Amino acid sequence: MAAGAALVLGLAGCAGTRAGDPGAQQPAGGDNKGALIGVAMPTKTSERWIDDGNNVKAKLEELGYQVDLQYANDKVPDQQQQIESMLNKGAKVLIVASIDGTALSQQLAAAAEDGVKVIAYDRLINGTPNVDYYVTFDNNKVGVQQGTSLLQGLGILDAEGKDTGQTDKKTIELFAGSPDDNNAHFFFDGAMSVIQPYIDKGILTVGSGQTEFSQVAIQQWKQETAQARMETILNGFYAKGGKKLDGVLAPYDGLSRGILNATKAAAIPNPIVTGQDAEKPSDKLIMEGVQYSTIFKDTRLLGDTAATMVDDLLNGREPKTNDTKTYDNKVKIVPTYLHDTHIVTKENLIKVVVESGYYTKEEVESGQ
Image 1: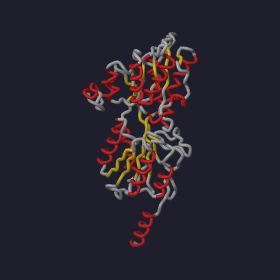
Image 2: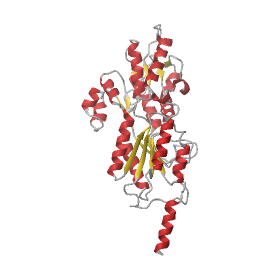
Image 3: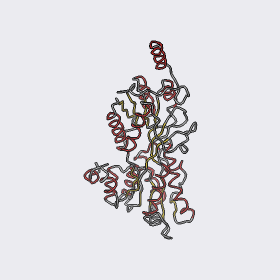
Image 4: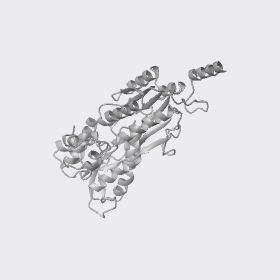
């Protein structure tokens, strides 16, 4: 009987089962001590993703796992190859922050055939049944917060988000994130849900007339692309002095800095500019009164949640989620764990970012 049981267990270990199949086996506790975990991050061009990778790696190592952490430098083929390499090395679970959420179906199908679970990290992976969990922030709420902070900076809403009754007309411009990033659509739609009513009332005007996502999106979230677009807008619609730029919706701090570079070069007084991620260079600009706001996303929490999901999966436990309805990847609703985010301005930056231990006061003041 013992020999038979060993044979059955051996065969079960070799058999490929697709993630989510009724016959898929959850690893037994203790069988995966020291297992290799693949962590695929999109780029090192944003300090946010460097922090994410370090946080996830540290937490997984604290739990006793080996980690293969790779950055793909915004190149989809590189990320595909990195994931394939992780699987070839025997990774038991993949944590993936995708560059293009539609470009990994083949790699994740191979993972499923090997019984490897996949956790999408902050960017939903679309068009495949082979993504098992998603850890992120409430991305629609992030957009609402960005739109709200823009309106607060313009004096249209007060600190509590209530309409001030202001009727002075303001001119703004809109920016959105990369069209291949699922989150970019959530951010833009959330922001426009609070901005559009004031455009409809005539309180706000988009000076360039560019209001569609496809017109305002910035491929791969590149700062230099945002700067170039802002320069083109300023030259085309503001150069003759007929319009005053009052504010800019920017969904990420890197884009915010590019936008502010353009307005500075054009000798335009600092407009109200939003952001996201509380990156150190933008924190410095906020403290100096140059950038108005950012959205703080504590990536330490995201890393902890992703690592805990891995530990649950490899020890036969069901990972905790708090949203099983919202995140449809066009094939399935992906069980998700959401974390909260916070609007940060000069008034509360030290309390939220520094006193939480995320960055030191010296890092914020130096921007490094």
